Amino acid sequence: MMYLTEPNFKRIFWNQYVFKMKALSGVFISLILVQLFAFLLSLDGTGGYSADYGNFVISVKFFSGDLISVLTLWWAVIAGFGLTLRSYRETDFLLVTNRATGHLSMIALLLTASLYAGITTPLLGFFLRLVVYWRNMNVVIGEVAPPLDQLLMSLPVTACYAALFSCLGYAAGMLFHYDKGLLGILIGGYIALLSIPSTNGFILNVHRFYNAESSVLLFIAKVVLTVCLVYAFIIILTNRMEVRQ
Image (cartoon, rainbow, N blue to C red; front, side, top):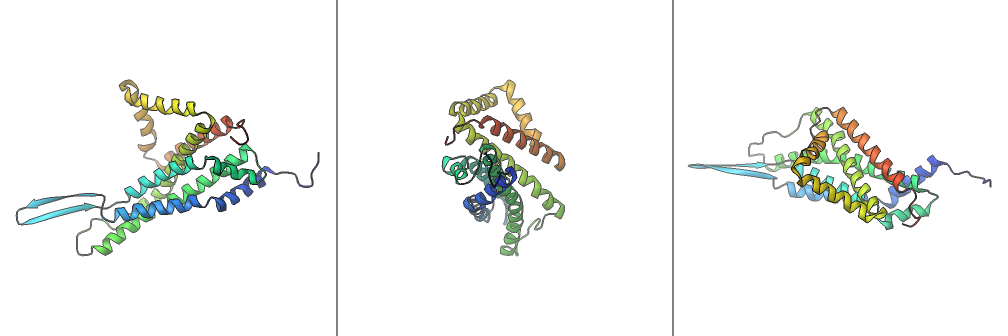
């Protein structure tokens, strides 16, 4: 049968992506709220100590954007998992769609949010230092502004971590809807491997594969490869799921 307008994969994907960026804008709003909450908590310091030297006491407080980074990564996992809920997945049925374009448009949304998180997280950490400096100009502060190359380097690294964690959250959510037992087996197996001394080293080496990488380009390549493989696996695995499942 011929139609006046033939469906185009790229057009369908793009229409879904634009639609989800508008309809699911709460993903970005939740990120902003989480980061603002972490920023306010960090204003009182993330640690410190004091030492008594007879007639005077030295107090040291640590201020960093670590809490902002940690809560942002938790947000990424929850956002990835949350977008697999039925109420979000059924937004696909408002448009011409199939499993592939539905997944790809949702993945593009997560990657866009991860890019936004990669930009805002380091900048909020930098802004935190400025606020602390303005509030405590009468005390000694070690370093107000980080080196420019360090700040620029942290942008793609943070974005990659957010993309990786949101990818794992999305994969966990899709596995949960595909087969709850399969997700339970994977999580149980991971915990079991951590508790067994003979395999614990292997798991730690997998973690170091990402965290201990000194080259930014190699780290980005590792994350991109991992994200592509995980998303490809999820798309292939769930391609034959029921329409409303």
